[in-house]
Image (cartoon, rainbow, N blue to C red):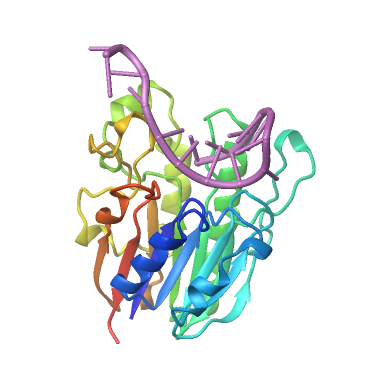
Length: 266
DNA sequence: ATGGTTGTCCAACAA
């Protein structure tokens, strides 16, 4: 069984590439982030035509998450408990479509689009840290309730947990960039303390998952590792292999993120 | 050539 996560940066703009990728990669479950559409604009037939069930959560042109599966798609949830809301300048806060879950062949798969943070002193950074803290409390409680639960926290985490997860840590620190600050990294580590782990890194040392569209970041090899599929202990034990599909970042019409694939035994 | 992006509600914001 193969589970993947991919921030597609607009599903409509990426429909042909997503379909080609699904066919050649042959994954069983795909957690999608940044669909950038509401349900009425969602390309349902893309998944139906390829024998995937799909569930979507999107309310406007921002964010949007989905899960496609051909091994079952049960008990869909579109938020986690106490998920913080956000409204810029405090106006009309909403629970943004950044998290959804479904059970696929016994695995509880979460598609997560963690808030970006925007700047170290931006209100969006407080939102990001709070959002992660509440998600972590939820995730810890799921494991306490069932230590054998198979859970994947898959998505765009918008955090580079280690210095080697960006092309030049000095550049990030000197420019007061987000994604590498200690509070963000502590928020990520809290999931590891709660029992979740990253099964992809051992198979992909030194690899990145994201390259900014600007500044020729991809041809220059200037990327970041910010997309993760964290696994509960029972699920981590099943991981046979994992890879980051850097080829998918190439060429015209690519997302700025590459898909991350985890292969499970059985 | 000292710049060089992409997506959305096509204007201004988000990443």
